[in-house]
Image 1 (cartoon, rainbow, N blue to C red):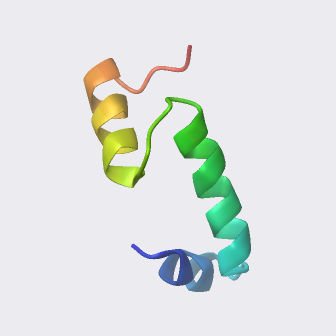
Image 2 (cartoon, helix red, strand yellow):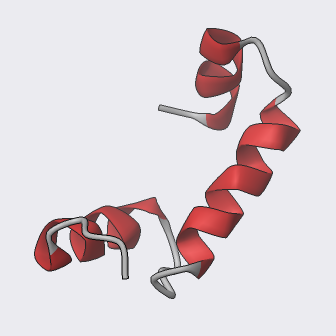
Amino acid sequence: MTDKQIAARFLISHFTVGKHVQHMLRKPGAANRTQAVSYTSFEGGEER
């Protein structure tokens, strides 16, 4: 989903979505959403 699609679904700004995505990417050190999903799938999605 795009930031705009997510924002529309949750009735928030797409800028807010973008900030949350940045924070989620930073934690595993991912460059993009695909890497973040791969990392989470590989690591089992457990919080460290």
